Image (cartoon, rainbow, N blue to C red; front, side, top):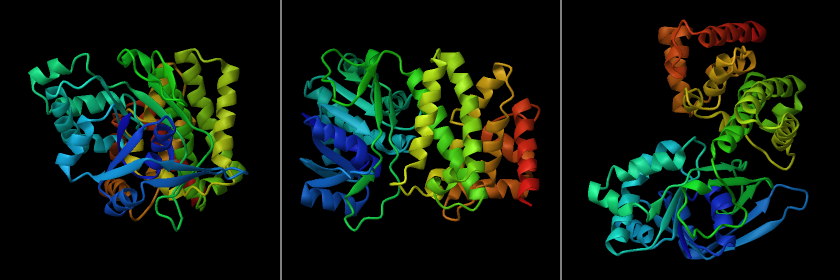
Length: 384
């Protein structure tokens, strides 16, 4: 079996590539990082270690790589693959779609068998977004031919992979916990199931549980940690003030998730406790700057902060902790992050209310907008 995976970064190698290789796939990574591509091509293997007491290490073999700019070879690889996966960031999907579409056309012309394309991104409906981008390069006739032969099942993925500091550029350290859930209802008949992947009918509960617990809590720890001078998530979670902020946020999102999806309250509370334990993992060094990066994306209306806040508002619940986390996101600073600079410029040029409206898409008269402004001003007084 052959798989093409777009994104040879830490998540691609330490999570998706690891599971695919252990499932018996020959994995071809596609990336634009020339060093990573060259190393994978020459060595054909790499190692992954777990951030645990035992420091278990796995050797991932049978891998190679292609440069994303070599579109002809990328298309050939896609055409010959049983499975195509991505871990590039949802905003990058549109940039890799043309190469994937070129490979899809070759496969359709050659009468290739069923193929699954799965976007393993921190996004709701990631594979559906990938399909829309890919189909934008296919003719109506090609789209018709793709029916029953291509499937883009949505997925939810969860594994903390911090910034790496190894002499070996291919070695990756990851947390022991992982979850990869694929929507079985969107797959084609006969899909070989990948060991370690959970297949479920209907993915929204899993995606929202992960996004509104792990991702929401993680960025809250980062933004509050930054405001209190912490450099890592582990340092942040060791501060009871910040841990209490995270717990309050997850209490709010938990209220939404249990009401919306019918999760058992006790089981979901255990999921929250496990999540906070993961953030505290002493074997990880996860920088606040990494987790907090891209605040514009994290403040967008369909992401981890605004969406659950609006869901609670619709339930008649005041999302004060989430609003406080959003206010902290507006105060986050990282000199090498263009999204931070974008927020800073908006605040300086147009003021707080305009910035809240621009980045959250909440109208100035919306109650959640007012709550964010209130919490921003409260944080300013507390930190003065």
